[in-house]
Length: 377
Image (cartoon, rainbow, N blue to C red; front, side):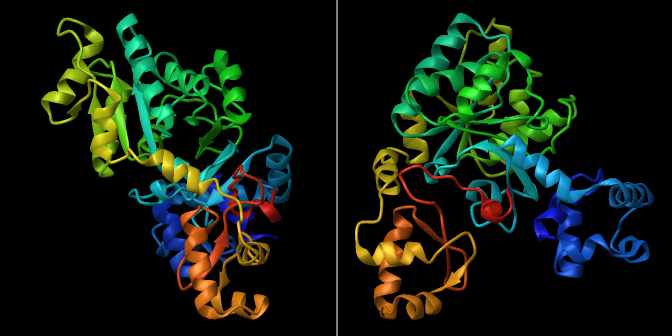
């Protein structure tokens, strides 16, 4: 049974989050060994009685092979902390989710992402501003991240798609529970070539209210900054802005009329130090993103030399050391190293530490980053 099964298993256990996963890995070296650990040992690691009971029930009732087969049939891909393609921005936040599920595809350009969030009860002003700013972001090669909710979120996703941009929707439920239901069409449009839908919640998880603050932490975590367009003083968008500050992300806000209820939150953010946004250039300049289109063009390149093709053919999602690549290709170390450096700039490969490299795509110009997907799903 693959180690991924046990990541999926622990992800299904209520009460086991990033801190406990880290403790299990430190104590046992792998989640496969941790899955069979005794309760006395787990209690010493800080597992309380309720969590131990939840784990006991999961061990007795979960068929992990069957669950993986369900994911496969549903077209769901999985990334874990061990996946080389786990989003770099998300990996940087405090306590990143150990497992994320997604549909669609990831692109190397998604590291240049901005979240666009706001009220569900948007005004004509909010709609117009969201459309203008997201149009500018998309035309600049910026991936737009939002929460698939009604209002500003929906405008952000739809505008990105209209202008040929990429967009990522983050859900507060399992990927089989689209919320709100009327956004099923938008959901399928995103995963059909315009980006990805992502969640840290397992299949079957209902869109309960308690899940959405957790979801908001991923919205900010996947990005370089968060733009708030219209939000009242109790808006969930402000929760996303607070997470952004905790994650050392930039926060941007669009000013609005002082008597408008849905501008009170954004105006307050500006009072508290958020950058006031009057045009997309305010965001691009602050994040130094003016050159993203050039970076994206480089990342979309295909192998241009026999050396690149030879190295790419010997790389997969499993790390391979430079010395092994030299032996397999017969190329000198200096040539392998310089070629890999150029390929990394193009987004074709990634160094994952210790002079080990993984392949980031499977050919063609479209990236499908899926961690252990090649041997799992």
